[in-house]
Length: 328
Ligand code: GCU
Image (cartoon, rainbow, N blue to C red; front, side, top):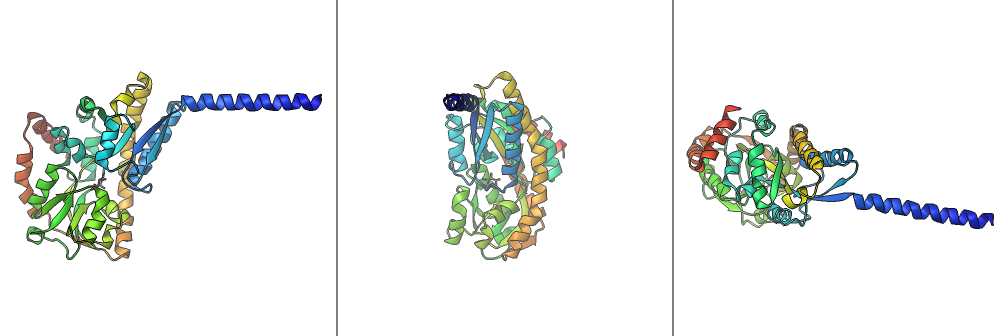
């Protein structure tokens, strides 16, 4: 009798535990985020911290899962998945969003920021809020901008120290017309393709090199195929954290406010993580045989000056450009 009662009690406890477990499970909504780089990347770590805070501050109602290494597709595909609500978030480079609204072009113009401090000031100023929410009409919203440092040229055969060195060079760029034009003003030819194809394209001689920041260069081991890194620092293109409009509209007002606030608050921490990682990325690349060359950037700046003017076509772009420059 006693044994029977005990058994019954054990079953009852197990059933109620599994009921309460499923009640919790169903109350937690998973947010899937696409990320095209590794889980060691400073943006991944900043996003992870953001996700933990979101989980705590919404009392477990939301849980962020980040899929690194382009597991959910390249950035262009990820953006479309967010737009149609198949996934909830993605980190995409500014040129991808610029393909929807050319005002974004200003955020990634050559030599527009004087350095990391200037860029951080712009991203945390609140001045970009209206622009960032204006993309809702395309089915996504920009929550915040992260830094991806400064981009420089890296090549297969020799360093690039002036515009003449770039002549005839096929350099991979991100998928936007602005990026192709920038390569033009740097003296070479821009070949648009997604990040995942770059290593092999250089290796097979389809490209002479690429351009990117030190961290991506080292993380993706691109020094193995293009060992000459030349510090042209021609672009500081932001990465944008985007969220599906359909998804965010399913959240309560209060949770939406929390999500937007925490995303913004994660930006300064991400800048710090970024700046702390640059030296070790360079050291890794050097230890594997990469050469880093300092470059006189003035001729490149002068050559791209005309392009800056050409790229600013609308009143919105003009106003944004002025604002950004005034914060430098
Ligand atoms: C940087 C940036 C990425 C982007 C990549 C690229 O690493 O952070 O968002 O995908 O450049 O060149 O494609």
